[in-house]
Length: 398
Image (tube, rainbow, N blue to C red; front, side, top):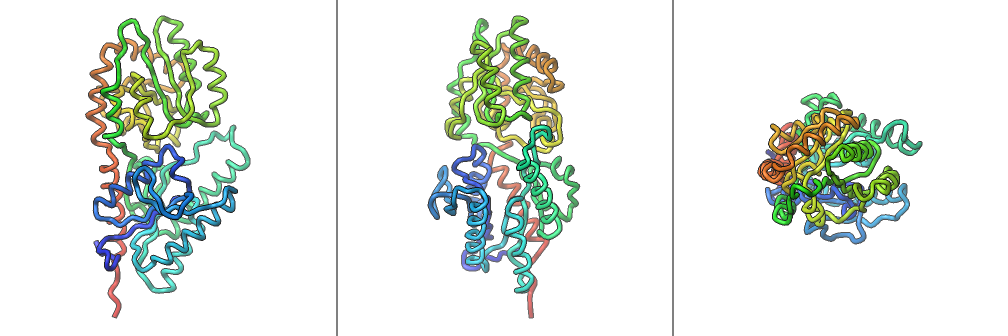
């Protein structure tokens, strides 16, 4: 790999993410990967929204750009200041990594590089999700955002030096050629943080209910209402389950209303800080992933899946490729062969029959989680970035 970072002797990545990372439940994707890349010898400048110019988030140094609260002006101010930061460090940067909504601001840097006859920095786009809001629930703003994202992805494929994605399924869905794709880097988990749940958990006695948990977005497409109805039906037939939903989203009010009719069988609680999630998982016996077999889920890679594993939780999961590509075998999962209510009831029945084996299943999950750490994720990202640098070596000029 050809290095471009002068006196620092390290390849330099500027990673722009136009969002307030301190407020995101999935902030670990950027923060912990940055931490691991730095330990692997990369100089990483991670840039996001924030109240102060430079600070730490969850122990990781970031460059925070103050922005107004209005969404439109926030994007404009962030990206103007981001570009100023990039240009100030232009001669030391090897790769600029950006996301969809930054496309119109970042791609003109390709023209600047061409006009100045420079080989660096390379400019790459990271794609980690597809539009998830069902068409029958889209607002005008949602539709505009979807079309905007699609257009940005098209621009990036035409002008950026490369693309990175979260799964092979994502690459296939986008029809990315080997020439477009630098590499695939999945999500991961902080084993040290989430393994705390293992020693704190009390497994159910024969006369106690099996406690299920879901932590994440409470949106319609996540199939949580169907799961809730399946649990009520299963309990009516003699099984005993409880479900805790932790998060927020568009279906939150409907889920709360439904939960109020279940006499405490289903509860909805607000989001908690990331470092408190293991303590919620410690109070549960099984993590649930009831997602339907739709493309937006097939191409994904769910952090909560890895967190369940690291926390020593067996899982009840639908048999979709996003789950089967991670969970090998059946040692710590009960599969639901569909996402409709009856398929979930069948999965719950199979889970109920295995309740005496939950602790052993949890031990299998804990061991499997070590394949999916943020360190392993960062190694894959590092390989992808090095692939891009090798494809576009610095040319000698005479």
